[in-house]
Length: 136
Picture 1: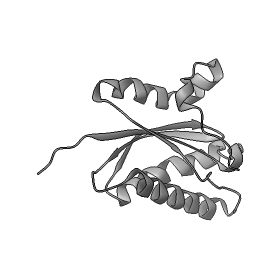
Picture 2: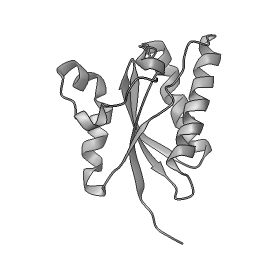
Picture 3: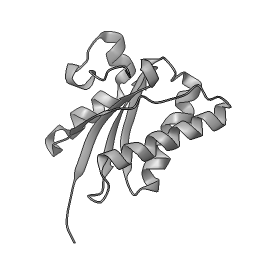
């Protein structure tokens, strides 16, 4: 049986980077993201964000592509938020950014993702991970 350790730091935004992730949406969204990841035999090790985007640290099986993972978690979490909130307003942007994580970098990335609100408040950001754009 092959051994793999495929970890990704993934960033995606709300449609047009609108501030759609309110505290009440966040309380539904983060568990929905984790549940949808489990549905495709993957795990979200950390999730954090601010009102217009989220960061995920995800562990994927080699049979799950990043694009399939994102399609499932974005579609499923969007549906869950819309259903629970009774609104069609919540939407993700089309794209995302994905970075592989070396094992020796994992703890630092987990800390970065888990402390997104504080890092944004302090302006203590890693530019490469914050460059996702608005939809065209």
